[in-house]
Length: 310
Image (cartoon, rainbow, N blue to C red; front, side):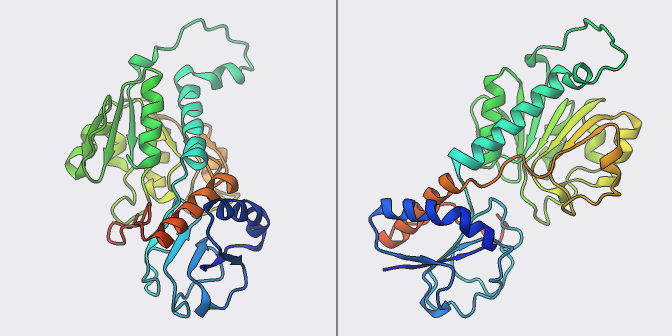
């Protein structure tokens, strides 16, 4: 009978206890689930990287760590973690939430909604926006979230290009890969969406050089990770007009400091890291299914590549 330790902030246990028990019950496995299990008795850890568990050495019979978050940058380099680490991939919750945020803000910028919502001069500008077919979109990052967003925007008629560290082949989407393909993917893009993981290879992927190859007046959406953007370079591009607006959901420091320029910049929209989040009901089913797979001797899903960092 597996013993499952829930290791996250105490308020998270209140949200997850009932959904996790329901999802585990549905597997038919006998189990013990709790927040206070002796380390040497723990088989699985349902884990948030901001929990008190940072040293995995005492967990001598541990089989796997099941991350509650999509991002693993705060745990993947932990040298005491030697068992498989699975990241959260939840199509019904986290992925769907990201698709909705990205689609909503893409349409907002595409249609020019801000000028209609805030119009103190009562300007009566009847110039229509272009149709989606005339608005090139580039997505940096073609993992689960990037692919889902790419397919959703393609269905709305946007010509979508995507870039990833390794080559991908996605029907209906023009794909680029590697360092050589980054500028090609961004060239003439009018809306750029960042959905890359936070790794040494992706830090400051949006910089003075990559900003310069986008279409003049391009718009940027970042629901991915704060360190993807060189903040000084982005602010300079906003001030020059090369970038007309940036909608940012993630930042190097969170919450975003009160005195940060992004708060008051007229061409920046700040959202408080709400693009998508783990939903307990759907995430619990992902966790329970992975534990069932491990107990059945089936390979875990969504195992992190420690070398790649995601």
